[in-house]
Image: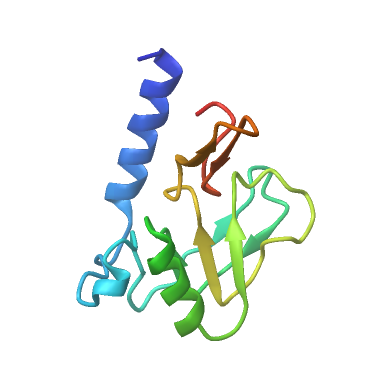
Length: 126
């Protein structure tokens, strides 16, 4: 493991453990949802801080079925967040933010056409 990967893992673990609220595990469709704040709204900011919002719900599903359920059951605006490097108002919403980062990996290979398909959260590095 490279030092940068170790640092990313440590930061992600620290941030995840610091999230308030509980995991949404009562509904099987939401069993892969990372966290939803209860009675508190925490801000989302892009890396430079020039874009900010206070979403009521934040999700990070690990399956397409969980993502479908989130989309189906959410009210209001749903925005997908990435790395937060955009300077434009692509993401800010006070309704629902969804991270597809946990929807990663290889989904299919076409040996005949020499192509591969990856899930939306797969980074170029991966």
